[in-house]
Image: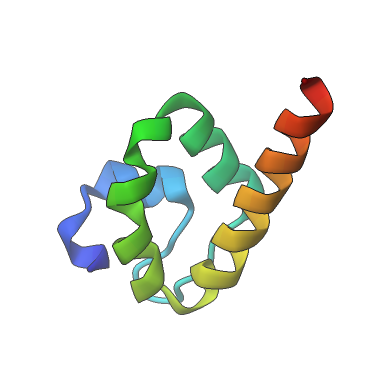
Length: 70
C-alpha cells in the first residue's frame, strides 16, 4: 500500500520505502495538519513494518495531548 502514496506523503510520514522506518513526531505533525488523511494513511502505514508501532504510539500520544487540553 505504501507505493500508492505520493512521495511527499511518504516523506512527511517519515516512512522510508526501503527500511520502513518512521518517527512519532513526523507522523503526529503530519496528522495534525492533515487529520482527514488518517483513514487513507492507515493501509499504507500497515505496509511499513516499523511504522505500524510508531503510528499507534503517535496516535496515542496525540490523543493524550488532546485529552490534556480539554
